[in-house]
Image 1 (cartoon, rainbow, N blue to C red):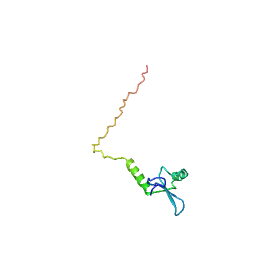
Image 2 (cartoon, rainbow, N blue to C red; image 1 turned 45 degrees about the vertical axis):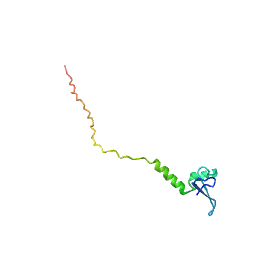
Image 3 (cartoon, rainbow, N blue to C red; image 1 turned 45 degrees about the horizontal axis):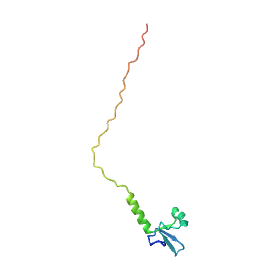
Image 4 (cartoon, rainbow, N blue to C red; image 1 turned 135 degrees about the vertical axis):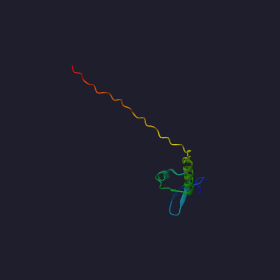
Length: 92
């Protein structure tokens, strides 16, 4: 399906009635349909779905497996406290 204003693939379908529909690309979508597009109540076409999948595929992170490394346990430093002897009072 092509846009009614140009030869580009239509992304949105505006249903005028049960029988009649008009198709628009993203550039030529009329302003009065913007609120329906933002609300998600405007029908989308197969071209829109294909474009969306293409974009999502390009945004997907590439996961590379790192080579297995030897796991080394990290030593936790032990705090050593110095004990002091109790002071004895000397009575004279």
